[in-house]
Image (cartoon, rainbow, N blue to C red; front, side, top):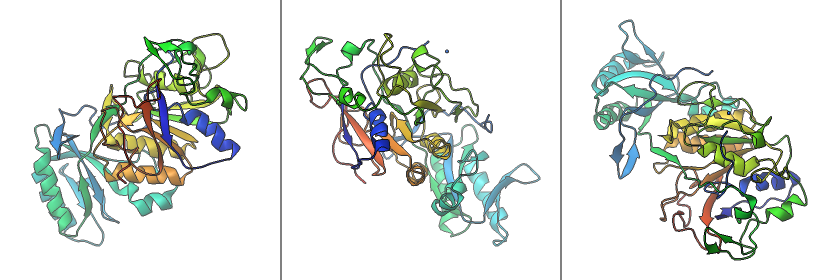
Length: 383
């Protein structure tokens, strides 16, 4: 499938190098077949999601943004409480609210202090915490209890559900002849005759450059398996949900597929050809298996931006679009990262997050006849 990409106008050489990788995002059609610590998480697996306004959300935790100057800790009895040097009743009030919500533990959104501390503080990213609920706790009741505390104008600034979503599916085709999205001569692919020229014109771009070896592409996905066509170009990354540096692919090769489309070595007589042949790949695992939470994407995105990633690839679809993820996108954009995100693969006009935000390049899919792919989300971005 080809891709229609909403992008800001750019004319620099660096922009051309980024564009080579950007054009391959989302649900691209061909990929490389698979071959090869941070702070530990408090809870890895959540119960089945709940529906909030028709959107899947975490049932086992909530996202809480503290007011400036407020901290979260366990008291002498092991109870989770809030503390503030300026608000005397904070610990007592929060102990009661947290007990009603059945809060078991918490951890910050950021896995390390943000490199741009001033912006992180301005956005309040350093004040977001994921609070885990005790087994069997009701997330709706917990949200109500914590929201009541927030409404009193005290230690909590905001309480939100954490949207649950996952990866945009990528089919696997094994040869360049099938990569019509890169070079469409009207060839027949899986029985469908294409329209010549309905591609991303990458062959012309290769006349200019095969890609900059200093280009770092962060792949927010399910991990990257070792592969000969990616050899020597997979950087040390992180696994956000597991709290480790183990970045082996967790979702049937999804992240490896995406990485191959982005950066498989070209002109080597093997397998397929990536959009850019020399770029380095920074794996950032943000799912457990094939699904995960918006907060994990936010954490991984901030981390990737702080590592200096030039391009961030997010073949993801989430529909809540909560504040932590939105502000993480704003933060990464301010660091100069070019972000590409899938519009979603549900075949409707509801653009997924983070593609719905203007700081990203939103990527939808077309088929080899230059028609909208039936599964691809479409339409204007809502914000």
